[in-house]
Length: 212
Ligand code: URA
Ligand code: SF4
Image (tube, rainbow, N blue to C red; front, side, top):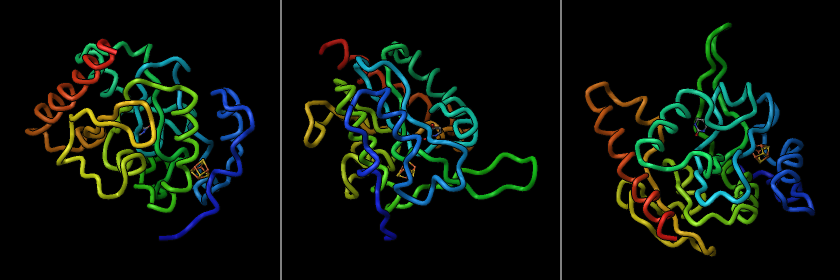
């Protein structure tokens, strides 16, 4: 694994979301800042009861600076609505805050690339700081990258998806489910079922938040 300096030394003294976001804009904790347009920090209210973690910003997110505003975000918004989760009470972020991509031909959409283990580890201090600032009741890991950042590399989404677990070292519960992009990439005949499984997992989150 390529080791990077990591984000820790870029963290500000004040740990409110606004201060964190500002400081993250200057992070050079790994190599991803160099080719991306900007840091895509999390978004949502500091008092959110649910915090959702994706993988890495995509093309649209890199351009706008906001998480989950592209096709995956559209699907996630719909799934939250179908599951009865109030979108306004959710903080969304990513395990890695800079877009990683393979350069595309001119004028084409750049293709997102999975962050490396070293980049996930380097960026983790921002995610931990967001968790500490928001103190959500439930954390949702969207896909394996988020789950491995928060639950360790032995965690398998396929084996434990949809289960409410205790977040190690925290007060929150945590649930892992599929990444919305995986649903968009699924073969057409499997897509509806994959979507319904995501909604089913998010209903567990809706119920847990209401009970808390
Ligand atoms: N996929 C992610 O994991 N995060 C985003 O913000 C957008 C797409
Ligand atoms: Fe810093 Fe994370 Fe961006 Fe790497 S990906 S430069 S650790 S904010």
